[in-house]
Image 1 (cartoon, rainbow, N blue to C red):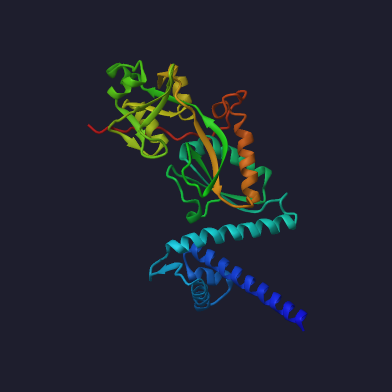
Image 2: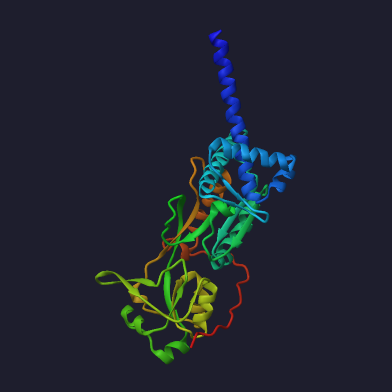
Length: 338
């Protein structure tokens, strides 16, 4: 009798786990689609049934996960944390099933990537064309945006980030580095003179990023690191916009060398303070923390890191290799605030 009770209890326990997993998956899909009706159609359920299951989950947890209005759904703080954990668990289960079924050598699904605009257009998009040929069964969705996307909330698998990372919830893998150069147009230098020392920048109009980089520019002299606080009347959140402002004589900028390589080679921009070697900036692939990295993410990160090692501007010690390029974005004329 005791053995039968043990078996019954075990089956009941497994059933409860499966039911909870189904509710977790339902909750994740509601958040990702932002709609009860969309999930009902997707799972071939009635909308009232979806709402009932969502209520069951909240009641079992004893907390509200979603704020519901007639127009939209939003996560509570508890809901946001629960969503992140559920998303990781579901990803782990899917990855485990893929490995067990032997699908890891033929990855499928859609890889969602977030990248800064200039970097994405100059380097990432050409490489993605090669990547897709290697893995034709995998779809790719890329978003080019200079803001920092919320990977979990916006459903991205991986993002390309510049600089030091502050979000401890993300895993960062170093895939390259970019030299930085201080540049200005000949017109600007003819009017204002060229700085001889990083400290001279305090007398110049310095163009800065609204994010990604701070208004403290790092240089090196004989005594080591030299951090200079700069200021100016023009800021932007786009590398292309900053490049175009520099080209139009608005001021001096400290930018990734990859962004202005052609302009320097053509003479449209002139480097200054090169003897003070501005620090390189790290390039990382970041993804949500998880015990099991999704196969598609690992393949992508490994591929990009290997390709970046061949590009001198992204890996100073590597032999020079021509960069596959798409047509670059045309420059636009901008005016500085008077």
